[in-house]
Length: 300
Figure 1 (cartoon, rainbow, N blue to C red):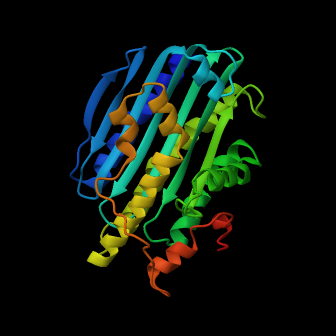
Figure 2: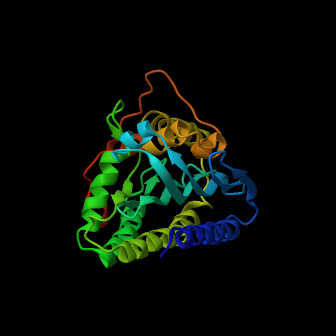
């Protein structure tokens, strides 16, 4: 497959996911903002403000140009030169604190025949950890991984635990998921098989999240729970602005700021030395924001 064919499929993935999310929300519609990158290429940023999805972004981009030597070295690519990058990035912030935040990214990067790779993943950030939901979520991802390679789930689950980690808080962003990067010429699978795996990851996003949305969107919640939601959103902001490599790379390469920062929630909160009450639902969630939990086997 060519880089143009990969970009075309990512574009169609954006269309399908947006259609599915609009149907699931019932009221909201995505507003599209087309943009062009001065150095080459562009994309379509889509944002929804709906009944159940307070703010959601589904972005597609396909950009090209010259990668600076500094940027190339930061990616361990040696010298700079022409590059092409395409993918879909999604973050959904639900209105209800009982529905989790979710993030997905699937992407492809290419410089030449010997320097290309796929990357991506899906991770879940509940405001309140619900073990049954976390187990079901991980089982969906494990099935996709197992279909591609027997080692992928354990490897990519551990990678997600390590990547989506707030070092300054000593806690994970949520219950994790899978994360993978730089699957290229030296990977165990062929380029065609890697591409099929990435496509399956992309295709599993909408049905997985819509199921979780339907489970909890009708539940009532209190102002105290909304307050905790803002605190948890604050942690999400901290990760994206302090630790996320994609955010840093996008800003360093003159990416479109509005698209890069669409992952941030509409409202978030920070309180000095905030402490949860012992034995509370908030404390249960805090206790489960750690690496190494075997969610897929319901061991927590």
